[in-house]
Length: 121
Image 1 (cartoon, rainbow, N blue to C red):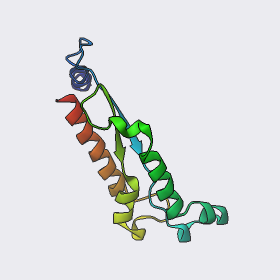
Image 2 (image 1 turned 90 degrees about the horizontal axis):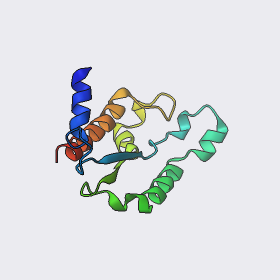
Image 3 (image 1 turned 45 degrees about the horizontal axis):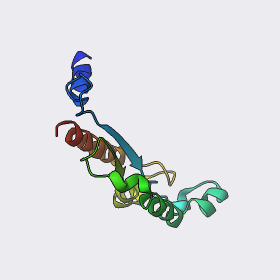
């Protein structure tokens, strides 16, 4: 609605394109997998928790994350789905990869908090 659009204008530094405008990007790491629950043998062999962790480590060491602090005009906020889903546990997934809504709700809250911090500074 109108309130959402007005809030978005305020997020852009008052809606006038002023220097306060920021771009915020998010990087979601892979969720924790439970290969024993996969129906496909290829997934069991390739989509291991160890492979997900290795991918997350490579991504985290990328220069992309050098500007993670909300002090510049652009920054990237990593959202660690691996930790979120691991803390939920194996009982939170029926198929080994898709988790209960509460896991994704936690990720959305992290994103909302980061946007608020970036846009209200």
